[in-house]
View 1 (tube, rainbow, N blue to C red):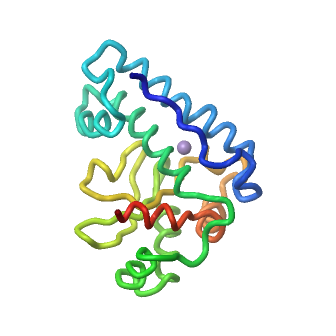
View 2 (cartoon, protein in one colour):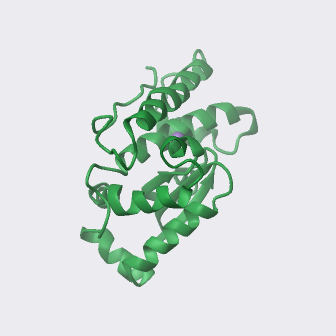
Length: 197
Ligand code: MN
């Protein structure tokens, strides 16, 4: 069994103009695809060949000699989660159970949005901003490079990629504008609710 690149859950131009077809072409077709290829090359013939992606990420986390495998596997996992965190015509007011949790743990949707944008802007260098459930509490966190909440006893509900390759073609250095547009026009609240289980 090899790890495969999943298709995008929408057409390449479906998120435009918030995220252009060009960005998705490079980001999914080149970056995400390269992590898949690298991972398959790294695990070929090893004990991890045939192991599922989640387990590869969890088994190699924190192991210095498996760092290359962890980085590529976690990036494959994180990107698939990111594609599903967005949908055409998404964003804006949350729905369902996650809406209740936002009000309970952040006081208001406005506070939640400010915190998500703030954490995304402050992640220095490459990484990810996340909405996670930890000990039954909704939290906003960030991780550097390939790191992922699935190895920190957290349940991720949503993520936004803040590596420059996620936004540079469309927003150049304006990460705050990209994060604002993600929140207002792309968040897939149905996916967040599904992840609450
Ligand atoms: Mn990326």
